[in-house]
Image: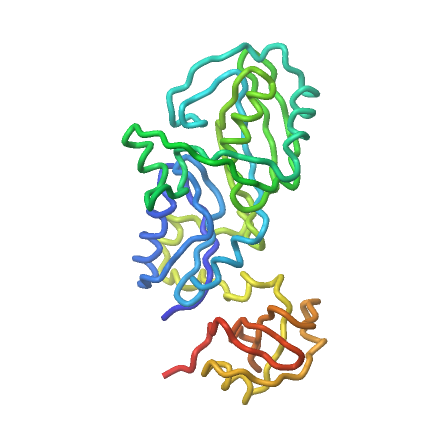
Length: 303
């Protein structure tokens, strides 16, 4: 089984699941999962976890994401973006760049968002977008979302105005909801006109492989990245050969502290990642004193 990560640049017009199916086929590996859905109309970084690295999805989900978005003011739609039926609400001609910047600042921090019907959130075992396609609407409870920073990059005034923004946020933040909530706060209506995810934790759009490039490659597996990239924020310990072998068998071991691991992390207890003598990620687990107990073994004994 393969083990690695893929920094994929999802193109516009396909679902995240369709991108996964293509990656499974070209990599000849059925165990491929993604860390965070992108809407079909959205583009950008879609981290894929391949093989045993699918066990690391939760660690990627913890990390911040950066979006480049264009918010349109003076229009709304039933989907919150241009995929739905768009209609005018109020003229945005009276809005200034200062008005929009001030309103955006009010969304920085922990905010409450109601998941849109056209989202991957589940309701009674079904995705909301599946229900929306059937013309159904169900009640959704608001959820907390963390928006760490919003930068207004440009503003185009007019009857229908547009604000180009960069948003750094945490898990569960919907840019469509930000657009509609902003429009409501400014009393003109709003929707999401365009979206690209430019960063997701350590994954950057500048380094991402395009889907057609992956599909046409004679060696698609060469684009796989080491799994430890997903857990760089977790403190590291290094195992001696005998210890690494025991951990690969799922056994707890006594370890020596290794302050010179080279990545700046210092393991003092709690959750850690354990690397073998060759530097590869062997497992994640709990460190209590000098005793390491593996909970996720990423590098089992071969053969």
